[in-house]
Length: 268
Image (cartoon, rainbow, N blue to C red; front, side):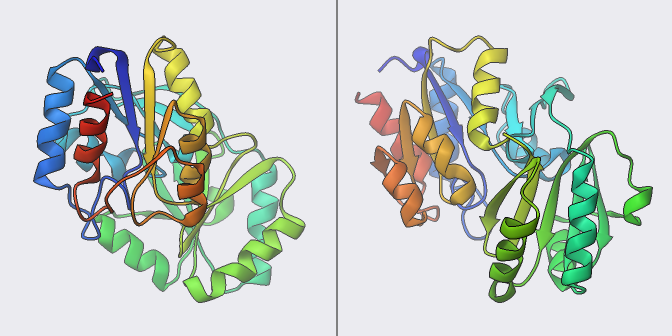
């Protein structure tokens, strides 16, 4: 297939990034070749601007706008501006208060444009911030700016997370969408928002309706995007539910899966 007709959208953590959060040299070379031959390459990630910039801009030099905040925004890293976004509804504050009361040791991060606010700290949050090399802003919920909140991340030990999921599905569903993005992260998004909706918005913004779209992922928050792409790809370490939604299953995230995807498209 002619790469000029192709848009590849990939998840970052667990897909493009290996377990050490690095990108395989083989993948970098394949991506550069794909782009030099006219292909369009973008990311769809749960990360916000600060968390994604190191990978998208510094390591890959991606110029195509990307889907961030698990679909709540489309951001142009080259121009450093939002092309579209969807803010959290006011009811999110009510749900946060309910979670704080029911789970006193819960960790809560509010991702807001280019800042990460921590309203409830715990060890999982501490480890998250240290791993991402970010310095969050510690604020009470009522002191976090209302406008520009794109998602709420619940950080909790994996063995306790199912209790949180069950609680939110019973008590905190109206007006929002919940996605499980990793064993220790559970995220509240605006209603109707997902990576799939973000992918559609990116395609509309850039008038890429005539492109062949391939989308790759590994976790539950990737499933709908993988299912709706022209070529849905699950990496080898993906959840079974993502593999079931995919058209193609490739190597796991520690063995340069993106190069395999690009090679597959080249031969189509």
